[in-house]
Length: 403
Image 1 (cartoon, one colour):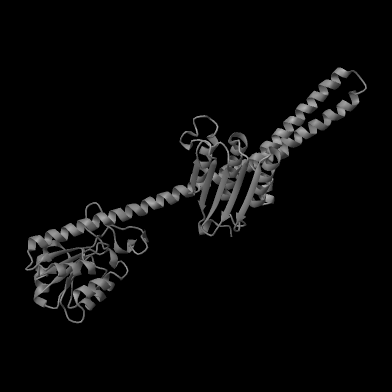
Image 2 (cartoon, rainbow, N blue to C red; image 1 turned 30 degrees about the vertical axis):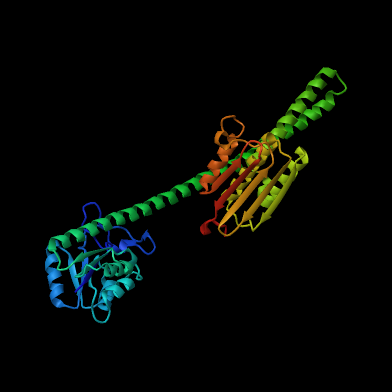
């Protein structure tokens, strides 16, 4: 007669370093589902399944002294019912039984919620390799010969319990690590949002307050210039110089304000702004530029929209200043899962491994940091004489999309 023993450690386990209640961890979804309470740890639950009562009693006599909670079933189907009701930590399962044999019961167990995580120990009176292979194919984790040696049985049970404990610790650690990553990403996005909001505030102050003050000063200087135009030419020249300086300062401040947060990004949207950027670069620098796009950008989160704008702006600035290119292209694609950007040029290229050494490509590091904050990826493909291609992918989570 052969017995299969299955160990499932998702009930309370009396290990010194770990005690987790079954309802606290959902292995089907891989997440913790309620607060941990270790005040009253439960005993590991074992279902002894065999159609011979004498065998069940024998196994019970071996395991009872170790403090397990022991349940009994007379066949595989009864075991599956008990499994659903009690969610045991360990099942002893005879292979040859009426109603449902052990191999079929083991296979069905693997399809039940949580059943795929249960270690299986086969008890067999045969040393035939074919039978062992069938047991492993059915989902068994280990086997032991009959007649059962009590010391060997206890050792294998403890070993499987220990392995399951380590697996449980690993799964819990992964959950905590994923939770930490989620928290870090959330905090990073909040920092990025605060950073962009501060830029908007500064841009408005520069444009509205400082810009208006300088505009008023410029008008007053022009009025004064008119009054002094019929007098000595020296003050007139000085006033003209002052007016030119103020005008230059006013233009610089407006440029800085636009750089901090271009009004057109809010007014026209990302696609129109990028298209204008490509057209201006083509017109004023004399490059042949191409812009293509696909997808819907109306619901992009502000932080992603701004990050794409900054990255494309930096990439095109590098094209204009350093690439010595004749052509360039920008491709923008948005799907339900992510948004992608590809910027290419046919310029002189560079070695990405040393892009920060010459001081010409420091902006690329800023692009990487901005993309990393949004859990995205950036690939820079370039080599001397072969142009440059920058590909950016930023994932879109459902909860991040604007409602």
